[in-house]
Length: 421
Image (cartoon, rainbow, N blue to C red; front, side):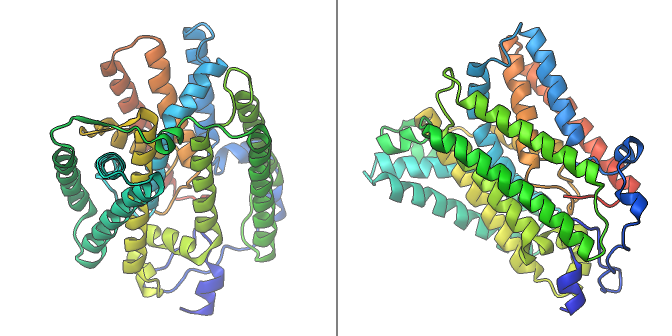
């Protein structure tokens, strides 16, 4: 790989490899006018997660009015946070493969299967909690590695490979739990995962630390892009971005630390921690830059020297590993491992990723999409349940929201404008 390739490519710039295999040159230096903040430029430019955030606010206001103040109560919001953990972790795995233009339809089945493996090891074989959890995670990693081999090495369509996995693991989980339809889990350590809250000093300190890291990263990225003469966002837009992040963190801390909530759940910390880790990987490492390059143009990335096969195997492995973790967290939350796969989990996870702004065509999006996407999907489910609406209505509404999100993605790609992740 040439030196230009190593230093010039950035996932937030739309440097794409041309048809001849050469890396496109960095964007020209931003003019002073491009750094001035104006409302018109702000609307015409890349709005990032702002439209999704506005949609979430509109949904919250609607359900707050429709439920006569119940939706935004501390108790309900705390319940909502617990309900979206599984969706969020699975959605994070879906984002990893969507970024390279692939898809994994087996995520929900893998989550249920690996949760069942953990339950069997703990209940039927008497394994301690940690080895049982590691056994479930190992099963997910092996499944993902196998998926990656089929897709990257044998060049099979990921849709077919993971659809076959969906069918196979649905049967497998029923077989290994037979004759039970649900395996109760009485291991105290496993059951405590979903109900444990952090002490106050950690519940307040960790979100603030995460906010400081995020703000520092945004500022450092802005300065670095200026030094490399790459296009940068207007200072006003960055300020708005940081203010929104600050307000969200403070609101979350106040919510979870209220007497009605009892503290920040451990599972919430796990989800946010995973998002931060993968955000740093995708935005601050060569591996992350390669992910966006492959998602933008796989053939051009291959000609540029990126090891596409190994990267796809790694991403499918991580994807199924996250699905396994989601299955373990869900089993802890329900105190049991079911034999029936919840197919809505897969739909909600993919919907969360797409609604949050991840492109189905690859190369565009951020792992932070998981937060907003999962909140929107979870809010719709939670709010409609509070209104006593049937599941049929929930599914129709979710379908309409997903369709609008994909339409917006298609329109954004048609504009062919550079985006920031």
